[in-house]
Figure (cartoon, rainbow, N blue to C red):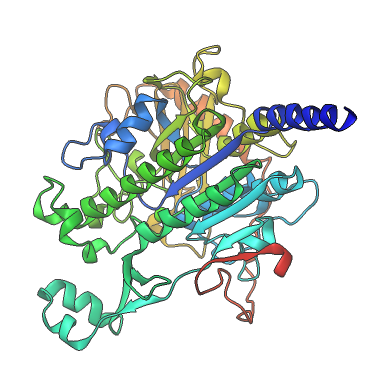
Length: 465
Ligand SMILES: [Ca+2]
């Protein structure tokens, strides 16, 4: 009898354990533009799974990254803070992220709470010694070998593709070789790793971070089977095809979660590390700007974001308030563990997404990239408040002011008409800047014995380190 009671106690505990310790999947696409998926108005690239995610979730139309581009954006994301809080004012690639007990990365925080934590895809965080396993992830998917094109394959390529592939000595950027020795589109390979991770950890609380190389340039290798699904004009067919592959993986995610009845206890966050790559014909519609020549405009930092958690978050709704990528940390921490570490700049977004709170999750957001070593096109000093965007490129410049609601393309500078707004926002920016750490020094580190993300197939675990 005691044995039977014991069995039921274990069973009841296991059930409540699953409900109390929900899962989170964070998808962070590289260079996906605000206007390049269906839920954000894109019409020439079919994204049925993202459309479904939006239908079963909340589309966040004023979601920002505060530290562009790739590397700083990911560092801010994983730390749950403005990058400037740890001295990151620009690209600063190789600058360490904090390694402090009281300031854990999101992965370290969740690992410490007993979560199975895994990362798949591009890393680009911290120093060359700070790989996923070193900053708190329990597992990292090894990077598969790249496909090596044969001379015959190269000779048969259209000229532009041939030029790109030859520049890389025939090594493919987006085709890899899978465990069976077959070539596979890297994004598809990543999706299979996501499925594998969830399959293996379905009976325990997990956090999965998928940060694919897609849809970073150059998407030119995108195969016809992907491109032909779109109605994109010729110049953006490659990017469009690459986006289709991203959408496919969201489909795989739905499938594996549903197969194990985990859909309603797994928060899915989908977002991008920075705005559209204009060079690849990405779009920021209705805004302008993006990666490349457009880094001074809204489209560089405003990204397409979707939250989905049927049963707890509304479905088919839009949240138009201001929020930032560092809110992902605090929202995941709050949802999974019921608390937010003190160092976080972010808030738990649930009350806003649920409509319990209205307006902006952050009344003000700030940008400050004046790192002397960074590319000048990326210098950016800006603030957002209500519908206003205050902006200048260099400290010595005059402020410009734009009304994003009535002028999303930032065509008319209203600074002279609204000196009071300029003064107020500039003062807030200056006050915020006073709270930041000084510019960090990027170390010159020797190449580590092992690459930051291990190469091969399968998974490397922290316990094997
Ligand atoms: Ca990027």
